[in-house]
Image (cartoon, rainbow, N blue to C red):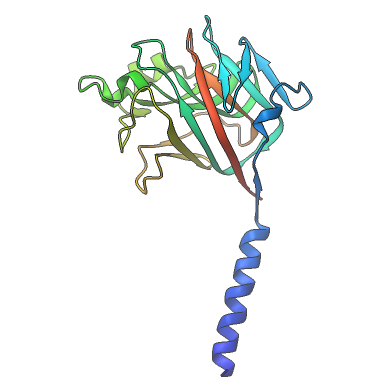
Length: 214
């Protein structure tokens, strides 16, 4: 092997080791969501049966992963809601401080295939100040969008949320094109991660994987 080829091989190997050293991967064991040491639930009842199910009741519901100090990186998960208008809001909270202060990406599955409402399928919010209503009224079309490819409204779909503060990109079903790209409105650059459901909504979650950049 020539000196040049050897140098290229060493460079590639070193680069790969450097990249892996710069990120950590966490795949929580969701079968242990009943452990209060590992998870904290707010305003919901939770059941695990191959997936996490949060029931529906008034107000937002959250299931926080304790100790999930997330800054930048990528969050992958599978989500399922319902094809029931105004009753299915399902997603993920991140950069959380408490039950009322967090950013979130969530989906409205009942809008996925509604030709008149599909542009309201995925939404960014930053609680408590920047609610969906405030953002829609003041910045129509900027913090919500349609999703592509379009999932089945009552079926499972895969969501990837990439965070490079302040830029957040949302990908659906492993598309290489983001369905939504926004700049975060909060000044929090890190915080908790949790499953999120909206007012009167229930949701199902599985296959959570968190890849954090150091």
